[in-house]
Length: 240
Image (cartoon, rainbow, N blue to C red):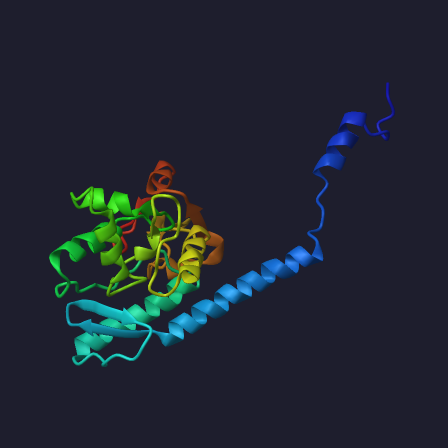
């Protein structure tokens, strides 16, 4: 009988192969530097934003001075948009609940923007896809122009539309910000459930914020949550 204290050669080989190694200090510094730059870029972007709203919803977001909303209802919507953008840029929100007012936007552009709003969080589609969604398959260039003039970037996610060849395409706040937004979304969970209430919410829902950390469960889809007995939240409506 072999001595139990002597490691099996195969065990030794596997242990050596899977032994964790510390990341090089240079790599760690680069990762930290990239994370800090993204955080600083988003902070500068957020501070530069001006938001206009009507009583029906947010109608304009730009990185320059704008006239303040006139009515109390419009001011509340602008404040809500600013709060949600703040949470979104910090990876604490996977959807926007504030209403949007596109009533002043030309019909073609409005259809383009509504199609862009259907692109799931963390995903991307080519301009040609948007053109097909609005029934104008040959209008990819016009789609690009309509998205470039998006009055409510971030909330209407034109950053999720790329060129058909995989290129970023243009973006109001610059292609570097566009790339970082998609990277942010890829790293932000979309759905979270509460182990005590058995309810699944979109990340950012007011109900989700009441969950205790030890009761929080991350799900890949509503179907996954339902398969283990969770039901969709009636407030943020993740199944919709």
